[in-house]
Image 1 (cartoon, helix red, strand yellow):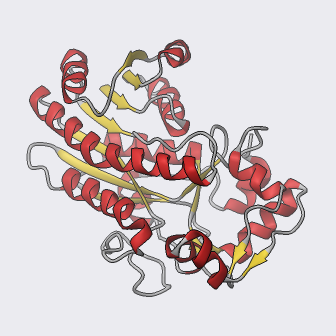
Image 2: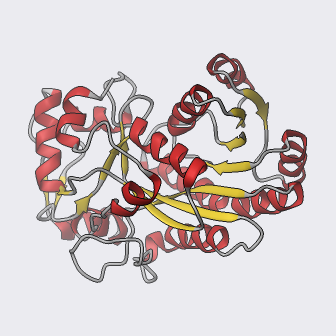
Length: 314
């Protein structure tokens, strides 16, 4: 198949290019940075520069590619993770999940695309209970005010993609990425890893938020399976070992040879960083990925973050 991959130069995008090409697919990959074109071509993609927030740029690129499938992996979640940059990255990603999604859908419909696969997120499942969430449940409709815009952007993306009638529309709710190219890897510039080493990624409150993690290569293989076999709807993409932050973060620090993480009261973080961070660290729900394994035939290289953190970080 011919695949138009929007966001091909990101952590999951580069994994996807390699896996799709290896399976015989023809990939047209986009980047917003001309300097990344050569790297994408080296992976086997036809590489193009596209401004995802410019509807004419998107329409022209999709029309020229004539793809059967469009894969939406557009985010702006890279660069330094200080407070100012974090707010900028979140705002840019929100636009890509709203305006960027709408531009891709319009271009795909005009080009006769028959399947859309888009990136969503499993960390914001509705806070109804602490049991594992499946795909029948929704993204939180009433998040803390400081993250309301970002969570609403996820809800917009999922609704827009899965409601189309002219093609299969698939939203993949990924767990937390780790592994090569992510902020949680063995690379010296991996932001989250460096924060853990410097004890700047604390356990907030009781650390009771349950995170589902997924190795970046496993996330990409699930996406390939969705491209090849998925049908309209939502699929969760995470490993089989959801765990509270108070469990996985100290273990990761140990594997990295870092000091144990600090513990910070939830009330203090709420004052400094807002309610959204506290919710993620104390109320997040894990997810089950049984549907993806059953319907897509997806298998994980790292069924647990325990082995993945030890053997899959580089």
